[in-house]
Length: 450
Image (cartoon, rainbow, N blue to C red; front, side, top):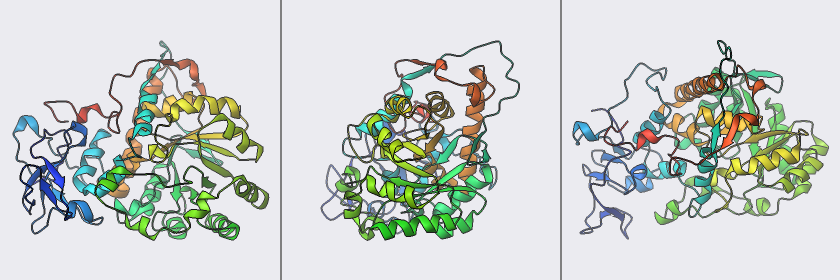
């Protein structure tokens, strides 16, 4: 039977985590064994439906990073189930809407891996504000213009990209696909976008470069050592053909990820992590060190104020990366698109600007570029696509984003990003409640279960 995830299924069975680590029913405390049908969560966007593998305990959904914890089981009537995606071969064409990656990823991932994608820090307020800030922007379209040919391409580091998109640095991509970052880099290279490799994602700096030598690659570092460590990382990135070097600066302390804490779950990569004190002690002197000793373009990721953007400019930083870590670090921060205008004003064209934070649609990309960004980072959507179909999923996701961007530009009366500016934007009230899924309302519409 086809594997499916009923993202918007009603609550069928209340479950909780027992003291022994097993899922138990809230009514009688009994363990859920193999073959138990279950639904977790009461909010539509937080639920899932499936059947545990033969011989698997319910604990697999809590403690196993590697395998898939459940198989979808068609136990609901036609009016309340999500139909499986049409299979059209190995190239990824079965995905016709971006939200279909979310559904397939949910079917493929256990609860821990799923929570890693959709979760954020503490109350998850910053994450929701990321989405709300995007949904508070409306368009002002112009009409009666010839938009027969729309070209959404841009140039980056002397190369042409089909979209102004970078697949943002995400740690532990190996949770979603065996090829991990290598699969992402190959997909990006095949499509013609950019990739920024996280220093805490497999298979590492050198092997990712070997897997996708022709892709436009950048390297992002969490500082886990002293000056010699940083210099070695820059040298290795340069030797492997990375086009830019990025320092992440918003992780002085690791945040409270309450979804994981509630399950008493710690990812293996967190157990192995060392050098946290170096990240806590990171200062502007490290930025100066890199700029003084190396010619590779430098990106600072995690800028959230005009003041820090100005200091970065004083240090000769080439790219300002507006980011709040997808809401996974400081809780109750502003949405990235609320921060972007003040950073754009402070930079005033003296550096390039990247931004990320719940960008999931082509319209989101257009809004960011119109607001002054040069490049848009895609994080969670990257993970869903990778978990759904690996490298082919990455390519197909980018194809769908490109299609949405082309249609958006054309409907605005534009033929390229060069014609776009903030005059095409207008403040508006959001229509969807902000959540990690609010870019995909079809996931929650009853009774159709798209």
